[in-house]
Image 1 (cartoon, rainbow, N blue to C red):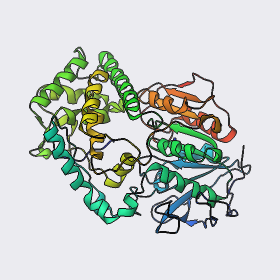
Image 2 (image 1 turned 30 degrees about the horizontal axis):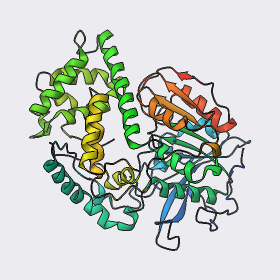
Image 3 (image 1 turned 180 degrees about the vertical axis):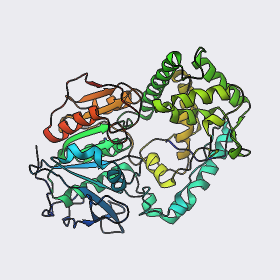
Image 4 (image 1 turned 45 degrees about the horizontal axis):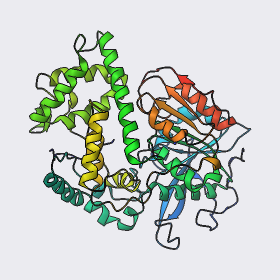
Length: 480
């Protein structure tokens, strides 16, 4: 059982906005939404972006109550024959859309030739516009209880870990689920004056997309989701898909190691070596870099740190070297700076918990751990230990996973790297006629993060012209 750190866990054509604000239309609350007033964005944001402010209720069931201001950003279409608006979410949850769009604006050049790209900084997110970051920077401790007594200790620590953030903004903290944020999205659509809108969701943005699709299916013209989690199946199913994908990604690393002179484990049984390292660290946690001080790394720590290295082919040499070092008792290669697992914003974790990524009691947690040992010989328990952070302070999930209204939606486009392909397919397969592109490699977020030209070409064609690629389309491995 470890207690040292927080855990990182670490989608018919209409008239474009053009350079003017449209007439108001009905919002999700049934009231008139005033048009957005665009001006230059504040801070270090590209001059190509325009920004506006939109006030929305903290609690959509109380539209006359307290409100918050959402910062909305727009990268206007650059071509004369515009084809509508794409609403974009970078994921996170809680990713600052305006900053991310500004930072990766070149990836949207083709899409902007015909469409406005609009995004926003979501409620409770990392922009810090709605929550005090000083109070919400770190949440429940990452812990791996092996008994009911340890589990009860974890619950008490979890409750204490979120108290400062929850107490600072109690009403907002209780309204961070993705269905509430989907209502924010609908308010943005209404303020834009669009009858329908297209959506591009990266990573956890796919959960926002799925939530919007369930609530407002008739408002979606098109939806593309890239590297997204499964929020349509029961939690146990989505965990199985995540483990299947993660094991597939790890096997790619194993095969690379067998044939690469840059692999410090070449000539060994990589999988057996890794599993032996984890068992050793579980028996007696390993020391790390000098900067780590007294910190020690157990098997679960190593799994989380290795997960981040499996995600990029550029990190595979470092992962192999780290495993080789740990086999000799030195875990410094997994955390060279001695920083440990970075802190996570508590309000961001609150989104996950409210969306149903959680366990209801000790028995459910232990059952999930047992399932994971059968599903994932290399990373078992990793997901369970992470989502345990939602117990017991999170109330019953406000926005649990649920199927999509398939008959009411247009065909979807998905993009899935090797280890996320099963989760993306779980979402897109809900809607007949949908297509999921398989990226033949690892690397999370092919459109936004990687700027993959193959993926960008297919997504832009679909969002602009409504043309899906052929079923079975794949994109070749590209620098991760």
